[in-house]
Image (cartoon, rainbow, N blue to C red; front, top):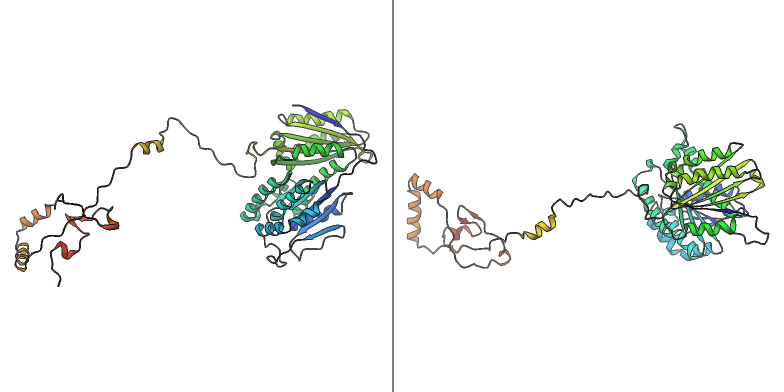
Length: 439
């Protein structure tokens, strides 16, 4: 396993500035974007995309993109992702125009509802068509939110993976590792929001901080573009003399890394270390040794930068990706169980093909009895009425045989067998079987 070490140097004042635009889609995405707009994201542009006319108005510094059609009538999508997808497709030129001029587009969204789940894949495609690198940061519903939202979130996640360059998702259920049982609903959702914002901030810092722009943008494009697999992210920070050891302990415990398993399954890992002038080479080596042990089969790209604002601090950003053909053990979709095959078992298809079904006997029709005169019928009835018990017992044991007569065509019932009971063909009318003349 090769580790590529990139030592950054400050850019010259006339160096190209990377343009980043952050979109908050849907109700959850808009809420997260409002928190981000009030924090340290200097240089980034913000935009809110929603369909509900009753949604809170975005701050003045945030671009408001309200998608509306006659279908929605200002009431939003009603939790239906198909409506969100339809309205986004109808406004695709407007979304493309909003992405023009951006080098990187961040899409912040909570999947499971109608607007965010339906619009975000179309927005990611619009960003790529506008020439930007599309990165999505999404949250998945809690288990208690029901099967419907989970199914919609999983379907939207697959669509987003196919449209964006990289998708970093956080199942809300993982935040239970960070809160206690007494945490309120509001505190729980705030913890989820803060965790996702930290992820966006880590990637934004990696791109926007001086000395990281030119190199890391190319590396990030090479790492994520056209992979269409799974991407996970972790950003941790520590301070003091034990900061390197604290970073090593925090990374595997990060909820987005799934106990470090995400690093073991990764095909490529990008690690960015940022510290102050007091950052030592021994600290960098200690952190990277820990990461390399967990990424045995991945290509690791490491970069380090120094900033006066990070004196006595160390911040580490990790982005791990794996292609879609990798093991589905930790995939969001449940794996289909494989059925073991044994060559010793009989091939039932071959067996049935070698033994064709037995042909059914051809249909036959018993001809009607000969016409009897009135005198002959009276004699036959008298004989049956005065017959002895022995004769009746013998008659009950007798079976009427079938004569090899010509087959009579029975129309659409030609391929059906006759209904024979005690030697009589019940398919024939009773008056025919008994020889009763009708007036």
